[in-house]
Length: 297
Length: 167
Image 1 (tube, chains in turn red, purple):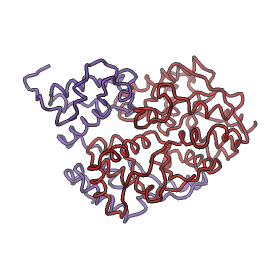
Image 2 (cartoon, helix red, strand yellow):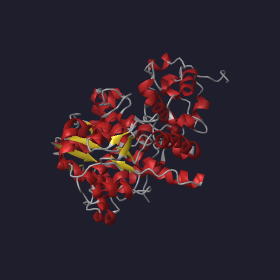
Image 3 (spheres, one colour):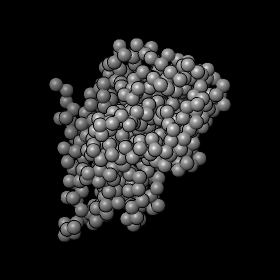
C-alpha cells in the first residue's frame, strides 16, 4: 500500500532520526510513502483552531487536499498533527457548508477537497495493516530479554469517536502487542494512561507543576516495572519524556531518571538492522545500553 | 461572584450548543487533566459555569484555557457530552476575537513560513542521517504566497492584518 507521509514540524526539524526510522522501516513492511510537498502546519491546536473555523479548516483542507490529489490516505506520527487533521477532516466531512467554504478558500491552489482522504496514525497502520506477525518475521534482531513500558499517545485515544482505533480507549493494546512482536516483555504500570503533559500551554505556563506531574509517571515506571526503555509513538511524548529526565535529575541532585525513550519505529529500525547513528542518534537520555543489546543480539 | 454584570446569553456567543447546559459540574473533566495541576489550575467545570452564567469580564481575563494540553480526555469522559475540549477552543476563539493581545504569535510564524518553527533548514543534519531535502512550503515561494493569500481571507488574519505585513 502507499500512503502520504505528513511529517509536521518537530520530527523533521528537531528529531529527524525519527523521520529516518519511519522512512526506512515502512517500505520494508510493504508500506510505501509519498511526500506531501508544500504542506503547512497541521494546524497546531494553539494556533488557528484557537482563533476561528475559517483559518483552521482552510489549513486542514490545504493539507488534506495535497494527499487527496495523489489519491492517498495520510499517515502521521505526531499525536497533535494526527488529532488536528483528523478532527478537521471530521468537521468538513459532516458539514457541507464548512466544506464548501474551505473549497472556496483553497480554490486558488487548483485543488478540490471531497474528504475522500483518511487520516491514519502510524501505530494504527502497523497494527491493522502490517500486523505483529509480519513484524516478527521481518526483523533480523530482537528485543528478547528487554523490558519496555508503553506511553500511549492521548491524541490517538481521545475522543475515541473521532480519533480512535483501539477496541477500548480505556484499555489500549496496539503498541504493547507491536512491541511484544519484537520480543520485548512489556510491563504494565499504574500511570500507563497518564498524559505525558508535554503538549499545549501547561508546561510553559506552569513549568514547576508540569515537571512534578510527569515525575509521578516516571516514578511509577521506576517503582513498578523493570523498564529498560519507554516506547512512544508521538513526537511530543518522545521529546518531552526524554528531555524532562535530565531536568529532574538536576533539580533533585540525583541520576535516578535515566530511562531511554524510543519512538516505536526507531526500535523497529534497530531490529531491522539499520544504522543506529541514522535512526536513533538524537536523544538526551543515553540509549547505548539498549542499542548495544539489540545490535549484539 | 458578582452576577449583576452577567450576560445570560453569553453562552450563545461563545459556545452555542445546548450540550453545555447539561453540565452538572460533576468534575469528571478534571480527573486526569494535566493542566488541572497548574498554577493557576485549569478547571474546566468552572469555565463551563462561567460561560453559562455569562461572566464576561472574568472570562475575558482568564488565561487558563490556554494551558490545555489538548489530550481530549475530558471530551472522552464527560458523561453529559458537553465536549469540553471543543468548549476550551471556543472560549479561546471568543477571547481572541474580543482581545487582539490574545492572538497567538504562532499564527504569525505559520503565516510567514508555513510552520510554527523552522522546518527543512537543517539540511546538513538531515543529509548526515541519509534524509532527502524536504519540499517545504518555505522553499516554494509561489505556493507560500497562495497560502498567505488564502489566510488573508480568514477572520483572524484579515482583522489583524497589521500583524502579518512583511517589512
